[in-house]
Length: 87
Image 1 (cartoon, helix red, strand yellow):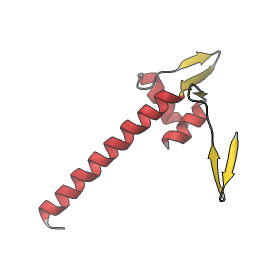
Image 2 (cartoon, rainbow, N blue to C red; image 1 turned 30 degrees about the vertical axis):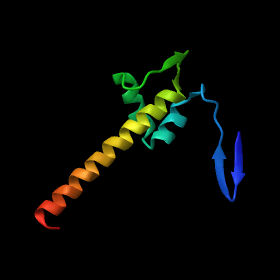
Image 3 (cartoon, rainbow, N blue to C red; image 1 turned 180 degrees about the horizontal axis):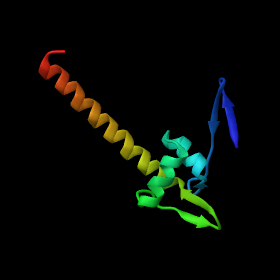
């Protein structure tokens, strides 16, 4: 289901929803093969329905928050280093 507000599309997803690998990769802003590797390593829980993988929305959101926090920490380290060397 999509709703358009002021020209921007908004997607409404049930909280207990499961995502396809394509949807999850899009939400995480990674490629689908990268997401598949994450699933194989066990960093994101999932289940298989025949040959297809289904990923809980809550697990994808938790992983996104962790990736975002890691990115912010890396940026903070780089910024501190830049100030340290006078850039």
